[in-house]
Image (cartoon, rainbow, N blue to C red; front, side):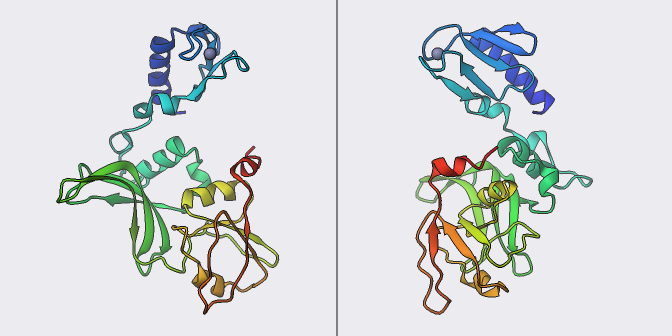
Length: 256
Ligand SMILES: [Zn+2]
């Protein structure tokens, strides 16, 4: 956790929970659920705040849930520079998504999103599917509220550029070999998370996008697709069965 974020979070935790400081721990905070003074957290890495009455109360929260703004304002706090053109995107990937940017360097680049009726502009994390042809998906570092002409508003968190039908995004360098199992997931961030746990995964960007083009381009046809939804392959491409993926609970077991 960045030092300035940690200091801000600690200051708020101490005031909100009336913690007592014991070395590396903040203890005896007042639980918002059961009111007992048994809430604790680590002073060095205050990511999670928990009630010590695990069975009787079980309250816990992450500091990101409690103080989202302490982790926010990435555009202002981490502006891109000539030397570090991905600074805002890296900060978002590290602090909001929990990735280590150095391990996934080159997998994304920083972009910029603005909308004529948006309430703000923001940096984005761009995942290229086909950069030559201008096809990519970008995750907005901060949500942009767009007011339509009829006055309705929409919160935008992502932006899709170019037609991605038939395509997928894959972690650069991911080699597909005979007998591989490839997970089809919707989001690039999900694909990265699986990849970090040694699972080959690609992002189709939308759940009804059957990645026929990418599958046809594979040198091996001996792959098993794993997905959490049923995709109907278009008639012209080689039909492949998609096994249902583990349930959410099962997939959690791959995490360390
Ligand atoms: Zn409690």
